[in-house]
Length: 473
Image (cartoon, rainbow, N blue to C red):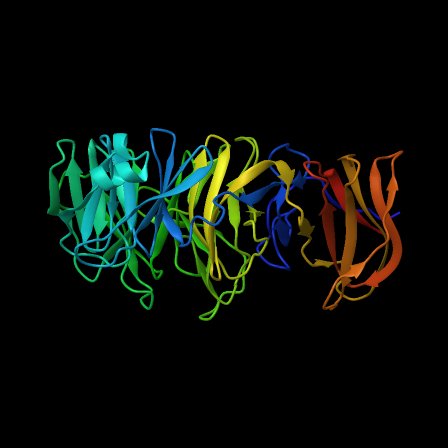
């Protein structure tokens, strides 16, 4: 009997339909490969948490020291406060000049600061509980930016100060609440600061010139001198977001799914999100659409045009240092259960609670991970496996060994052979004696692709420990 084509480890998503590391998959949607090493199951579901309260995309969020969260509209100036699961519109920013959408925010030294195009605003953290408190105590137009960037004002708190990107300048609020808009770090136009991250006592800055210019910089600055320590070129049309993994700072740059790691001076190639990338098929990760959930770095992929790759929350994960870091996803799909034409505005992790702001068409919301319900449309697909380069091979058995198959749950098997455009369904049998779901059908193929769909029941899902295909001889 021929040896089976077997998957017993789970190494994330493959680089393409045809190639990837051993035990990787062409598609993994809503599938959990990290929680219990050696097994594969289904992730929890994202459910809408904000109801109909939020009516604009929030690309900025602050987890406040009082336990609440502030969600800021990127377009309308509205600010919503979430506390105890209740979302309340507490304030609408009306800047004296420039657009009203929030382009950056942070809590610093007992104040909440937020930035619109031209102005920096603030309110004492002690006064954010109610809309009336905001009306009485917010200080709109507290300070004026010098460069007035129309799209980005990223904020970083480090070295006892709040640093704010403003086009080619870095503004600063010190511990005595003194504001300096220029003279901290001035870059040369047309360089614009898009995102920033703290690294040790320094700040790493990702820049943009224009989306039509495939050249920008990654900059390291000690926050003390008025010049940078390192300013290195990046051949992408913008550094979009930084993601701290706990040991390495990653950067997503450009609009073709590229991730890099920062070695302290240069961006080095790291991983690439598989997709069909072209001038009309683009995506990126927004600056605050990153986080760390149960020790696993996560990020939200936003469609810019053409749906080059599935959109949702991906991960760079492993269970511990003893396992390789692999790219998986989308692990979590927004509550609309769509992976196309989706914008992921921001991510915030509160303990083990995950919150995601999104836009899909004219709909906007904040989702929360529901620990009582599994995601209902999870599936995996293998890469296209070449069985023989010159002749047909007969396959006769498709199988998945399971650790558990709770009542009301099941596995469905499908396959594509050779150049099939769509999947063909198989008839599954559950052999409880050996804890295996299998399907027997003679399939002659030069190349094969295998798909498993998971049926869940409330908070129960199948737990698979191995899967494979068995040739006839």
